[in-house]
Every structure is written in structure tokens, then in C-alpha cells.
Length: 500
Image 1: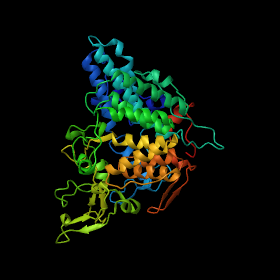
Image 2 (image 1 turned 90 degrees about the vertical axis):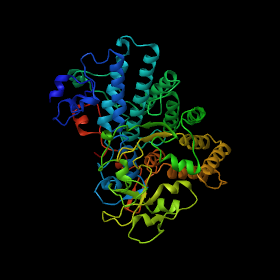
Image 3 (image 1 turned 60 degrees about the vertical axis):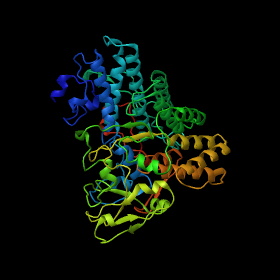
Image 4 (image 1 turned 30 degrees about the horizontal axis):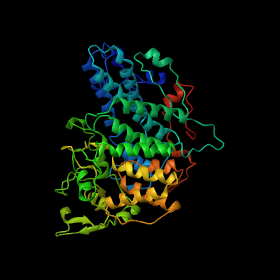
């Protein structure tokens, strides 16, 4: 436990985490932690501290895998292959087989808090530097808090409460801790859901004000804050806010809405041109690895040039529903049939069908159809940059919000414009049929990106699958994951989610 003596600033949020074994939150990679010995009194140290908060987004528990792949496995988009045994519990919606983002996210939030606490003590910093550090730290804190509350709590548009004492939201702390004594004495309760969303709004509004010009899509920016606010407001049911922030984000020069082959090629580029904010993997040593990376989760292929070159697991593949949406069936395009390069898939006119092909043949799974959104785009395996917010989302957010605001004409116009981007004909719909078509386009657009589970959750809908056979009602406790038991045991003010 030697890291205790170094007084790492990334100490745990609650005391119970500080007194556990050497597998506790104290065991962090020192390169991604902040040393308490005068760490935040120079611009270089502040930049390093902020980089640490960004780095935690790469964790497999955050955007390195789980917020995308676990989300999709919990939803109704695919099926596991049993190639490695991963995601089977999640795909079967078994108790406890769920997200585990709590630890890493609260580590990052504590570091962001320490950065914000330390702004006044940085020697020789310019006003522009101070604004950037504050803006990016608040953008990141807002993102981490949003990802925590959407996972561990109900969503404001659909809250299950009958006969249940409300567990509430999540603990919100806006001051950092640097000593175990402070952390041990802090027993922060779960804030209400509305209080958490209000804090996220505040952080992102500050980020918009402080970051009028960004420094690349791997960093927070005012435009990215507007885009994230659009998503947060969608979850909150704040429909007018959704329209306003989506419009602001679309008017920005950050990210480009793509169509046709350009959309497909965007998924082959190291940095997706649609990205308004993405998690960057810059070095091969940052690779998640063959076991848990997004590439290995979704496909066994190492590249599309030679499909006989296989190294991933291909653990999670599209189910019959998704295959039907894009007209996907295996198609032999040459001989001999034993050469994987002589196989592809049939596709319909939807350009998103181009993101699927035949993959794994070497792990006993047969010639399975796989998602190729993540395919060594960074130039090395198992470390793809991950688009967190793409500009196209703003169109779908705005269409849904206009529908909810009873502006059906605007919603239909936006939906049909979006369909044209994906090679699909216009539709003439109204009422609930229009909403369902918008949600269907969201389903198709974000396969592999982790939206579907939360779209079902925010509408209070159950999860129905045939492979595996699952019929999980919205009022089932397994819709929410358990809060780590060590948190509940060490903090009498935290109520565990029901059923655990």
C-alpha cells in the first residue's frame, strides 16, 4: 500500500474505498495520478493533471469498452458468440452483470475537482490558461457525472417508483480530497436525480462560456458542451433545451455531418470527421488489448484488406433483428469458399449496412457477421479512437424533441433529411408512428455506440430478445446495476439500488 504514503490526489470519494485491500482505488497507475507534493502550482503540472482526467476515459470500464459494448449487450441489438465467454451475463441480463463504471468515474471526478480547487494557486498562468483548465475540467466532470447517473439511476423521463423508497441519483461532490482522513469522514448521500442533472447543466454551461474555441475534438470545447447538453436535456425531457443546444452544435465548425460513402469512410479514418468529442488513443501502449477492446469485442478481423488475418474474439455480433434492418446475409463472392476474402454480405440501400461484413471463422463460431466500426483506425490494433458525440446525433435529438414539443412537421422534415443522408426514402408519418420511426433511426445509427439501452430506459420500455431469450420488464430491478457494495457498506447515507 505504498501509494498511501505518496498521498495521491486521486483518493477515493468515500471512506470505505480507502480501507479495503490493495485492490482498492488507491492502486492507480502513478502515470495517471497527481502527486500531492506541490503538484498543481505550475502550468505544466495543471496540464498533466487535466490529461489524467482525459486518460481515464480510455478505461475499458468507461469508453474503452463498457459504455458502448456492455450497453449494447444489455439492450436488444445483438447476441454473444461464446468465443471468449465475455458479455454473456450482460446479454442474458443476469443480476449483477451490468456496468461497473463507478470506481473509475469517481476517480476522475475527484481529479477534476482538485484541478478546479487549485486554479487560484497556479503561478504564472494567463487568463486564457485558467479559463481553459476550468472549462475542460467542468466539461469532463459533467460528462462523468452524466455517464454515472444514466447508469446507476433512473432517467427523468421514466422513473420507476411505485411502492419503492426512491434511491435517488448519485453522490455529487464538487471538492477534491487529498488525504485519507478527509475521504474517510466524507459520507456523501445520493443527491436527487434533478439535483444531479442541475449540476451537469451548470458544469456544461460554464464549459460553453469558458471554451469558445476548442483545441481539437479530443478535448472539451464550447461546441462539444452544447452537443453534450443536447443529449443530457434529451434524457431530462427538457425538449426546448434539446432543440436549442442541437441547433447551436450543428451551427458550430466542430464536426461534419456526413452522408453516403463519406459516412462509411469516416469510420475508417483515425479521427471520425463527424466527431464533436472523441476519446483519443495516441500510442500503441494505450491499447486496451485483445480481450476487452471494442475492436476485439465486435469483430475478429484485424483489417479489411485481408480477412484471413484474424486476432480478435468477435464476442458480440448483430442479432436477427439488426441483420434484417440492413439486409445482411453471408454472400460468397469468389472461390475457393475456404478463403475468407471470398466472402462478404448482402446489403440493402442503407449506407450503414456497409459497416458490416463476414468475420470470424477460426473460433468455432462459423462465418459470423460482424460490426466493423472499430478496426485499428489509429494504426495499431485494439486501440481505436472512440467518438463520444457525433454531429449526426444532433439531427436525431432535434427531431425527437420537436416531436415531443408537438412540432410534428419540423420533426418529420428533420427525420426525412436524416434518412436521405443514409440513403433511405422519405416517409409520411404522424403521431406515435413518427416517434417510433425516429427511435428506429436512432437504433440503426448507434449500433456499436451504446445508445440503445438508454433509449429504452428513458422511455420506460422493457428489453425483449429472442437470442438469448429475454423479456425484461422496465420495473425489473435488473434495469439498474448495483452500486459497489463497499460503497454501501462504508457509507450509511448511500442506499443500494433495489434488488441487490
